[in-house]
Image (tube, rainbow, N blue to C red):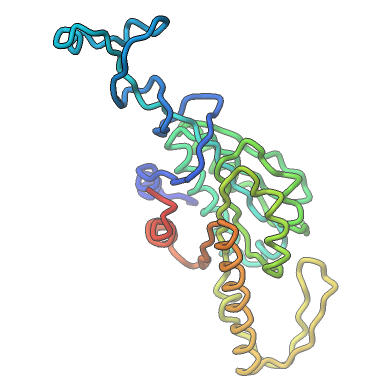
Length: 287
């Protein structure tokens, strides 16, 4: 099961934090700094002609002989977009792809549980229709849709993002293995970042973190099938690989921080509870 029932209940008690809010088409369950018609009382102000007389507080009038109306915090709908990298490298290992699906479903479930409008966009050459739902009643449908996606098409995830961009999204998550030079990756994100908050979930498998390889090998780029490297695997080569991977991850995290883009690196074998309730909460993403 992609999301066990006990985990769903825990996720439903969380909420995505964002520094940017803009009015959606419908009411949501998030307190805004704007005034509206929720049940969350804020303060009073003097009655003015044209105000709704039903909002007059007669208890205050009895004490002051002046008409005051109650003001309430407006509840806003957050529009959330989740971009899932469906390129071949994401599906090379079943554990990694299942982890990508589970992270996507969990992010969506939190949004739906908070009455946010959630879009899940599978970025691939297949032009798979994306899902756009609002409300916890659609959680099961959303999870089933995410489970139906496959990572089987070669495509440049980050270069393709501008075609899939959801202009009304306030908060966007990108789930990818980020196999692209950090500077080039950030350049592609500039077209997506305008007027919204971005967060990257950098997902790697244990094989990618610590390859258990030895001997003379021919390594082929699964994305294009053309780039071939002949290598004799030994401890020194593996150490150099891990150093370059660490350097790449740190460079990406640094450049994301410089542009105000959230970044977290997780492992495919890592429990979802640890990813969300520790890693993401530590970063201030979750309330």
